[in-house]
Image (cartoon, rainbow, N blue to C red; front, side, top):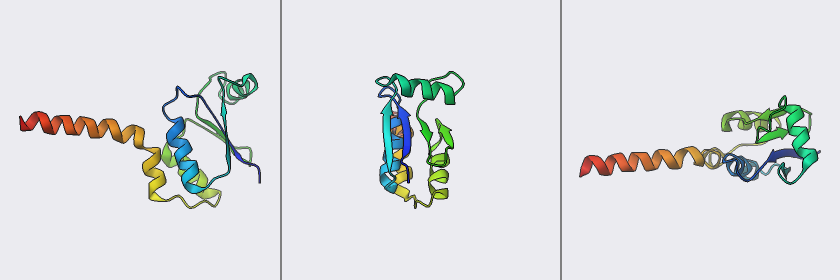
Length: 113
């Protein structure tokens, strides 16, 4: 089976969490940095009507997902036969959970003092 192609670039905050989900389920994938590969950049633009939206995924069946939520990526991976453990969801949502945890901590500290 062909690997999942994940297009991204280092400045995108969702690239690492989405890679974390792919790794957690053991998915065969290839990451391509669109800032280092002009052909990949053009492919992403073609998929996304001219936009360089990342992460963009191309699956072995030809389907795509652009900037998916962790839930959408999880659903696609499950449809492909992967078991998506809880830790994969946690990994994919760390970018959201860390700022929320900091805000809650600051509120608790502020209310306590």
